[in-house]
Amino acid sequence: MSLTGCPSNRQQLNQVLAEQGTSLTRLVLARRLARCRSALEDPTQANRMLSEIAYGWGFRDLTHFGRRFKQAYGILPSEARAGLEGRKKL
Image (cartoon, rainbow, N blue to C red):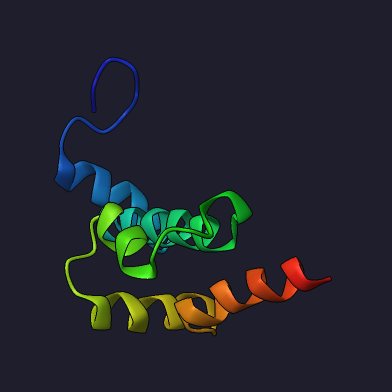
C-alpha cells in the first residue's frame, strides 16, 4: 500500500476489490455500461447511433456490448433507447 493507504499496484487493488466481491475489470465494465445507458436514455443524445455510443465508451464489438448490457440491466440497448422514444411521445 502507498502512504495514502491506497493500493499501489493493480494486484493490490484487485485484492481490495475482491473483498468487496468485484475486480478492477468488472468495475470498469460496469462504469462503461452505465455511461452507455445514460447516453442511450439522454434525450440530447437521441441523434447518436447506438454503435457510436458503444464504440465511444470503448466497446469494440456490438454483440459483446449487447450481451453485457442485457446481463447488467435485463434489457437490450435498443430497448433502453426505445424507452427514450416512448418518453418523447408523451
